[in-house]
Amino acid sequence: MPGNLGKRPGRAPAWIAALALAAALCPCLARPALAGRWDALIERLAGDGLDRGVVASTFARPEVRYDPGAMGKKLMEYHMAAHGSLLVSKIQARLGELEYYFGPADGRLNYLTKMGVKAFQAQNGLAPDGLPSAGLLAAAMAQSAKAPEALGLRGLVAPKVSVYESVLTPERLAEAEAFYRDNLSLLRGAQARYGAPEEIIVGLLTVETRVGKFLGEDLAVGVLASMAVSPSYASVAAVFSEENVTPAQAAWLDAKAAEKAQWAYRELKALFAYASANHLDIMNMPGSIYGAIGLCQFMPSNVSRFGVDGDGDGCVNLFNAADAVYSLANYLNYHGLTPGAGIESQRKALYHYNHSLVYVNTIMAVAGHLRGEPLP
Image (cartoon, rainbow, N blue to C red):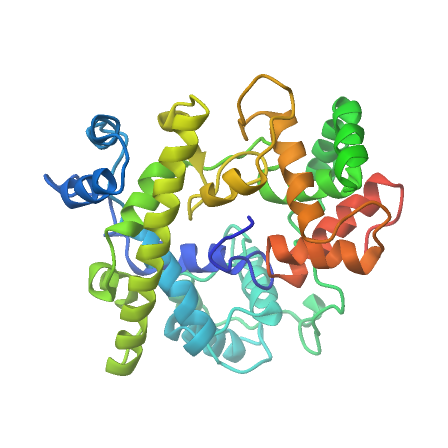
């Protein structure tokens, strides 16, 4: 997701941990349909030159709902990275007592924590997703049996090359292979124009959207609008109900919320402009948890810079494979993945797309698999 909010550090991406924490800590973050919620936002967008009628009719649609969880998830992600999570530290401490975890109770969702959580979940009939929750803590507190030695958790160390294991499954790799076969001519055309190897393009699309099979559960316009009208920590404080946030931390989160609300507003404007310029229905644009769109998960502001009409139909539609592939190749070319680029240049270009080495490693692993190389 180029131009994103700094997503997916570490493991499965950190935003998933933040999302799980937000849901676990505050199931009350439903989606209240409050009258007048969008009024000021509509005026601001119209004042910045967008068609008032289009904007107002969009926000009048019942599908466009305010969701405080969008900003809450982002702030929880920041809080976890900077200060650790109290919930996670409690889980670490309890799993340490049960000998599922042999690391510090620092509140950070690292490799050892995830593996310990997964092992505990599997041993106790829970879905082994490796993610923290209040329910997981309750289950651990109710359990007295220690981890079997046969699990091999004592002395476990993080792998030198970390990847998103959920991407390198037979099912996900089969999806990548099928997309590669079915779109080889398209992929080769993009490589000829921009230099991005077809295997890397497919690897990135596999990580981002399962080559278009999962484009997001919520409308991008609703996600971005919700963040744009949530410029303070107070608006999402319920997410942190178990976190003992200090006044200093609250002030820091308040500043982060204001910063991300402004970012979301800019992206929201870009989304409306993109839909209008390309005659696309904004109500048919699902997005990621932070508003990225299409098979290639561009933030809307990047479409005007890097979007390419790959199939020559007169518009850039990132939900179309041809346009997504050519746009992605154009972006990577701009960031150094030019014809003949070596491995390090390839990795640097991918790192521009998402500042996570795990992300880069996973894309390169999928690309290698498509070339017949063994998985790491």
